[in-house]
Amino acid sequence: MADPQDVNGPGNIRRVDERAPIYTQARPISIGHVVLFVDDLAAMLDFFVRRLGFAISDTYPGHAAFLRSRTPGSHHDAFILSRPGRAGLNHVAFTVSNIHEVFGGGLAMSRKGWETDIGPGRHPISSAYFWYFKGPFGGSLEYYADDDWCTAAWRPREFERKPELFAEWAIAGGIDGNTRRQLRAA
Image (tube, rainbow, N blue to C red; front, top):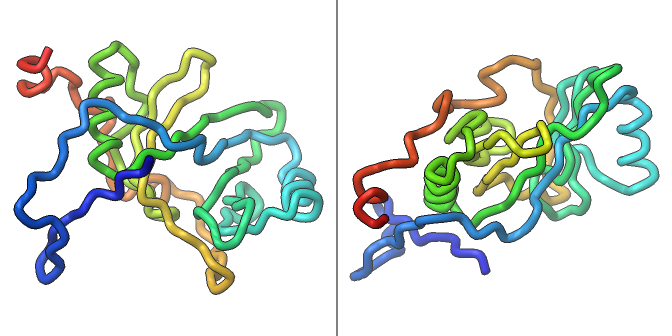
């Protein structure tokens, strides 16, 4: 069950007389999206859009496309990137309830010995908070929350491929999973 987390802000008080929960792990709600390297971007885009009925949310023209399976819906259920000769799975992303669960889940994975690939951080194109881990299959696994919700009014944009569009901010190597609070709890 999703926990959207009531967050207080100036002029927007949503949590009254109660403390915010502390997340000691993540509980994924669903597989949120997959990211695929593809040999032929045009053919794969045609397959997703014409045959499967996906909508384009945003693109890196000639290089990649963010695709959603339904409208209204999350910013993307699939992201395809052109990598001729290196087709395969880049990563699988798991939806969690909120940014606090991204951090709690990331710290728990780190504490269990899973190596951070990158994160925590925030994607500016989909607005999602993320934390990536190196997966046992050679690709990555991602916890993420708070991505854009697209209706028929959403207008896809074309973006130039550059690092600052992957992450507005991100912590290389992750955060040490052995915080004082976590060590005391163990």
